[in-house]
Length: 100
Image (tube, rainbow, N blue to C red):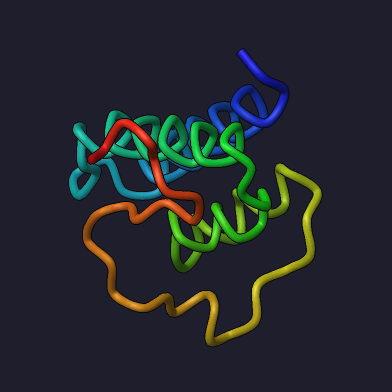
């Protein structure tokens, strides 16, 4: 497990725990699995040569983006970056050679 994978996994786990404590009735019990899956996609993209900040920007938006960037010790997101561009699925910065 790479250092980035460890940092991001810890950050999204803490974020999910905070969401549970903040509002137990509204907490999505499936969210953490999705967050960790996205962390895996981001780290795979970085291992193929993508810039970590660019990959994280593609993977998260809003508060989760701020948490991930802070965990990776990268510059804060601008308001436009935090809003994201509406991607439902992760689109790698660096193309996956096995995807074709």
